[in-house]
Length: 318
Image 1 (cartoon, one colour):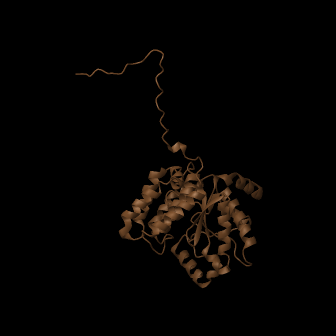
Image 2: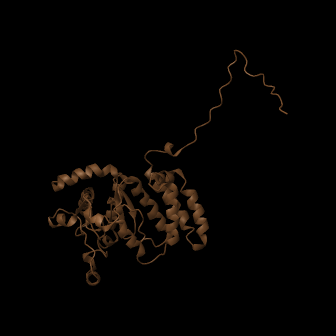
Image 3: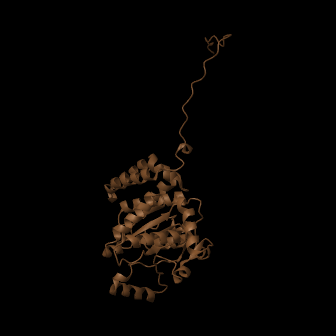
């Protein structure tokens, strides 16, 4: 049996009270349009300290709980959310990278802490260039209209930096290894670039860095050395099979990243000089820099693209 309501119902001349307003639920769209990269890098540095304390295999579960918690903090989540993968995709990929990690002589990530640092800092590249098409095959790198062949510029003396190509044969690799042992001061110990192609803006950036490095480094320091330019996702998979911590996707596969040699310049007292130059460019918002040990990864920021394209056209006349 229904119990009759004792409410008197609407009364003439009496306005019912307005319903209480609920506070809006924060959404992803309410986050800042441009994430704070200084806050992101600071939060990553703090996370790495905690990851280092949980580096053992017995701490796998605790490490996963830590990452679940820290990656959701706004300083980190804002950047990960702004990548194509999003926060959840980035988290899952990082956990998979940690599970497959096998430290070895080849890898530039000798421990889990270094792997986490390289992975998280490389997400800045992907946030910046999330709409850039991936160079999926070697053929696309060789034929892409936005990439230029550096050899044409090198032969005309238009490059301020140096690079060398990977040997195409076992014999070539053997000869290079022997030469490296006999005269190690002539060039860094590097396999060489698999592709000598990159974007025009990257050429302008590297020439600019090379000029500043030459002005600032001690006398007789060799010019800036580049160890990796644009390459394909296909090549990135080859690197992974060899044990390198080649992240996917990567700024290299978008054509906007390069690696430069650092460790070799210690013999000339110039390593810290080059590191300071790169970090100053990062502080100015021109590049993203990742210390990968003997080499540093450098990715151009979109904000610097127009200036460097103009610099390239003025310098090269095209």
